[in-house]
Image (cartoon, rainbow, N blue to C red; front, side, top):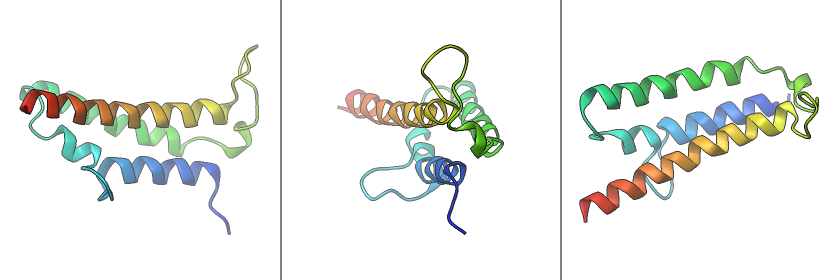
Length: 100
């Protein structure tokens, strides 16, 4: 059976969070040593909360429009995933700038 859209998003989250990347450290490794301990733990807690809602998505909701806007369940799920990956890149950039 082919993977569903939800399976694809979950795989993307997992790969970006704790799998080895071909070009840079993953998000978990990017957060190591960031800020004081309470702030770092809060970042990890926020990341841990992201996966369960994605795994609970119903593929049948992906094409459905939400409210009166143009967004569908799928476009919002993909957008949120991309947004989190964007922040991973920002963390890496800020660390590099701080280290130089």
